Amino acid sequence: MINQIKPGQYPGSAKPAAYDKEFVSRQNVEKDEQKASNPKTDAVAITGKNEVAVTYSNSVVNKKLDPSQLASLKSMAEQANENLRRIVEQLILKQGKSHEIFQIKGFSNQGEVSAKDIEEARLAISEDGEFGVKAVSDRLVEFAKTISGGDKSTFEELKGAIDQGFQAAREALGGYLPEICEETYRETMRKLEIWATE
Image (cartoon, rainbow, N blue to C red):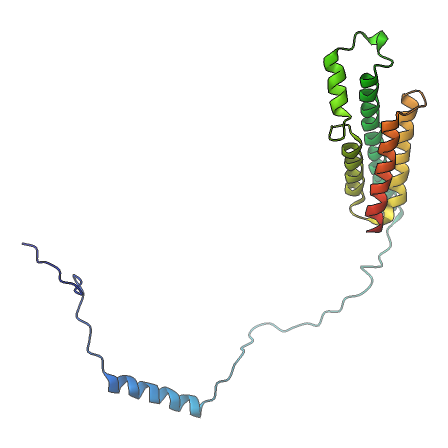
């Protein structure tokens, strides 16, 4: 037969001991006496290691690069700028060709241009389109900032690579860039200037 458990009663637990006020009071008095006789102090124990003074020299900071390291860095910078130039050229050519399709110019020898092609080109070069002024200029500036590593002192090199990319696209399109590409150039340079002077 199972006994019923009454409120306040827990199975398997002993009854709590009676509360002894005198015992608790004596312990508190003893603690107070110890605090009075031994004021609290902090102690730090240092073990094992001897500290050695460290002095930083300028030799690491002022280390001269040897000619092969300089050549390697210069080559990497040139490659990054060439990549930027190529990206600019490719994007501007795509933007220019989308504009031409929309304007239906220069495509008669490549077959018929469908209404769907024209609509896709119109959307691509629209304000929010993939090859619109805002999207292309944003991509170019972000790529330039990325390859610079955030180093604003490379502004002139980045600007030069962008100029070369636009010039290569201009030559590929017969020495002429549509107005949308010229507008993209101006917007790209404006955004690059803002970044350089932030």
